[in-house]
Amino acid sequence: MTKIHSSQLLLSVIVPTRNSASTLEACLKSILNQTYPNIELIVVDRDSTDATKRIAQKFTDHIYNYGPERSAQRNFGAKQANGKYLLMIDSDMELAKHVVEECVHEFIQEPRLLSLVVPEESFGQGFWAQCKRLERSFYVGAVWIEASRAFRAEIFENLNGYDESLISGEDWDLSRRVDICGPAGRIKSYIRHNEGRIKLYRLLKKKYYYAQQARAYLMKNPVPSKLAAPVGPVARYKLFFAHPRQLLSRPFIGAGMLFMKTCEFAFGAAGYLFGSHDDVEAIHE
Image 1 (cartoon, rainbow, N blue to C red):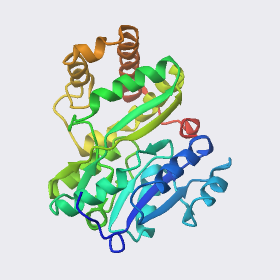
Image 2: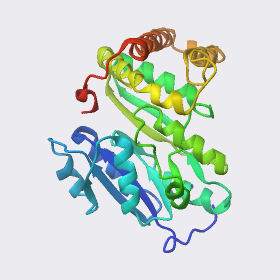
Image 3: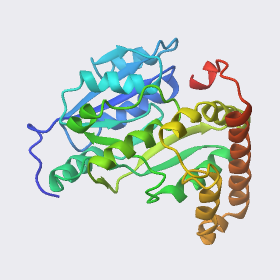
């Protein structure tokens, strides 16, 4: 890599939280243990009732309370940020040690790039977490499903950040709007997403809820067919079966992953077609 003059180039990492005590310490440690030194860490909490704020205080003085949803938290954090670049990280994620360095390097080397994709991999405990890890492995390099997480602060501000009216699909929406303005790049280092111990019924409940909110995203970003949309079931199954060795390397996990995704799509369809907008706050905790 070319030498980076870190005294001139601050990158702000923004972490929205909500009762995140179980994963937050590992997340924030991974941010402060980066090989790149010039990092501003901003935590935007939303009325946590556990130890989230106390944990955050061990790592940064930049702690705020704001809501009502993740998009609003991220946008608020961006307004407090001083960095030339912004990196959006969820509280159940951990960064490989070179992530920030690679982000800054790519932005310097390619001035045309407005945003960057950081590839993700999942980890967790139990069978369904293994299925989720396999699923996510198919998405690395799939430009139609990966969304940018790092942005030049200027373009983020010019586009008013995330659309706060969207609860589902806000990452894809912002990436699409940035892509209209200029190209996106990607780095090689990974974000590790801590899935914990996945319970299938909670996963399906979450899919049902977010599908209820999908109408707003699809009205703003219409597609000819919901089933054939890039993030819909047809495209996903095509992607899975296009890599049979990857799918069948562990047949039991592969079969479980296909069953899990089929259930997710079924519950998502039910949420989209029939669901009410009742409050299901518990899934965000």
